[in-house]
Image (cartoon, rainbow, N blue to C red; front, side, top):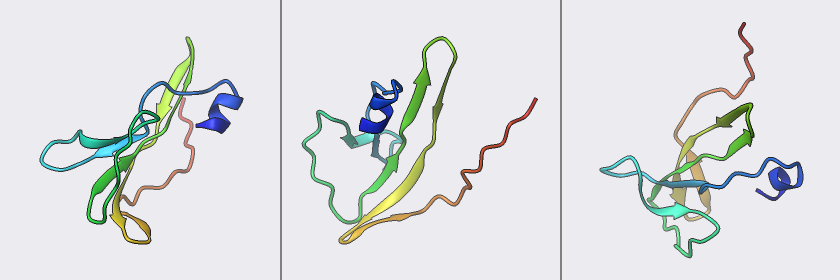
Length: 84
């Protein structure tokens, strides 16, 4: 978030949220959240970049929170593909 803001590309939404029976559940990642993530939570990590009056982009990964970090469960490449 700090690097994006430094480059004038900040985003005004949270970084992600929990996934369960609903697609958007608490806890949520945000500068205003004081939630504690516990092992077993399934979370999304979805930063965004927005250039006013031009475009916006978000990349979402789903992870399982573990004692020592997290394990990604999405398996999608992040190569930039430009089509015309």
